[in-house]
Length: 192
Image (tube, rainbow, N blue to C red; front, side, top):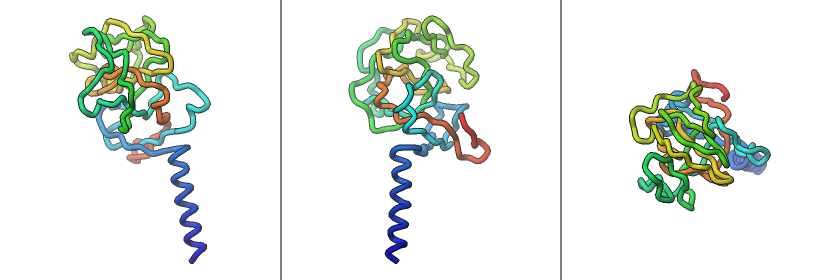
């Protein structure tokens, strides 16, 4: 009986260790990443990759957004109309969000027709995005510069995504990891 308890304790400890440091599963809570990820779809997130390499534009990541996103508080600093938020609040939320990195440290960014314009180049070759619609965050022509150590996130479903356009770039230390595979539902199993 004591051996069984030790085996169960070791298995539980191993499973918890894997989730804490290596790979963690997450469920998609909203429509913000459609059509890439549907509500309820489940992904695996690599938690150790960014200890060895920098996050890159195009990566789908899980991260903590700034405090205040859950209460409707948005940008961490005043900003003019027709400009994305350039600064997040100082503290991270305990919530987990999943979005795509569209710009990194030092990049100049504006938004045209829902597409990021990074360093003067509009990224219209985004086959994974849904149209933005006619909302105010679809066109933000006044550029911002992404601060050092920060990343600008946008959901693939631009018209239904609460993202960096509203609450600013996210510090690297708030990034949990990179989504690399989906394992549920069975007809959507695959890697990114």
